[in-house]
Length: 74
Image 1 (cartoon, rainbow, N blue to C red):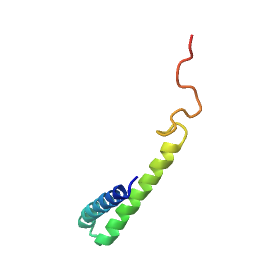
Image 2: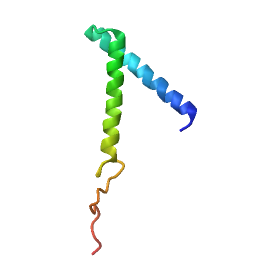
Image 3: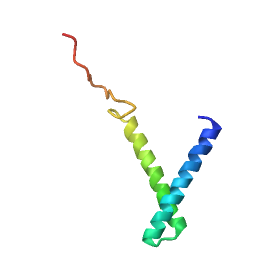
């Protein structure tokens, strides 16, 4: 991944945190910084959980899980 791609990813993530955090602050009455922090932590936790599930046997990155999934030749 190139440097500009990292900057783009950070910019999009910050924009999503600010937007959803602002909406959460408006709905709940929380301070904006607290709502944006909650959204940021939720995004990080979601990414971590998805990465763990995808790497597990049977997950997206390891679909075989050690078992034969095709029919044997007759």
